[in-house]
Amino acid sequence: DQQVKQNSPSLSVQEGRISILNCDYTNSMFDYFLWYKKYPAEGPTFLISISSIKDKNEDGRFTVFLNKSAKHLSLHIVPSQPGDSAVYFCAASVFGDNDMRFGAGTRLTVKP
Amino acid sequence: DAGVTQSPTHLIKTRGQQVTLRCSPKSGHDTVSWYQQALGQGPQFIFQYYEEEERQRGNFPDRFSGHQFPNYSSELNVNALLLGDSALYLCASSSPRGGYTFGSGTRLTVV
Image (cartoon, rainbow over the protein chains, first blue to last red):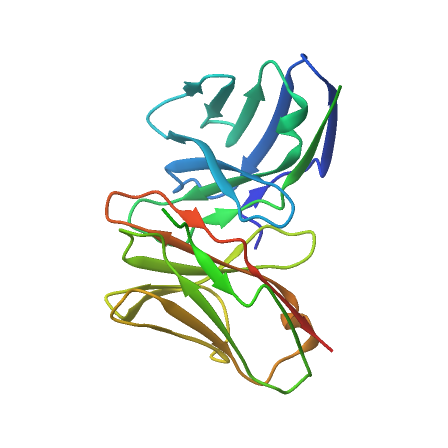
């Protein structure tokens, strides 16, 4: 069962513009959400997270928005840089449950 | 400070064989989780080890088993390999304060 979905397999943006990556989930019990970035031949690297008690979390160029009623979260990267080109995974978990559920990933390409 | 180390990086096995993958956690981490990432999909939780015991298990058959050693390192064993077991196997370590650190993975190909 696909409880976390990233419906866009790929996204291409111009350097300096905003990148918006989307993620939808079906399990209303999820209360913690994370974004990971993965370069080829490397493991996923934690990027940013958000708790369900918040609707926004910001860290430098990266902002995650959470819309609990729509069961939707998004990652905004502003401004996008070529080094941001990677696969981005959305993940969700329930407090006390060690089974973190991942989406299938979105490949972001930032063109110079 | 070394992060999570996985070995081997690549492996080719024949259907029906058995395989053992290894993981050394990041210094200071005592919990190890294993994930399977099939092509075009996100990582799927296999199980988590803490204090040398399996603490939680995902939806994987008993052919998948593991072990954690006193030094917190861990092994993932897969018996009776199927073609569908071909995937990238990721190990992630964590501490009680939280935060997962992933290794680069072992690419397993079953032929």
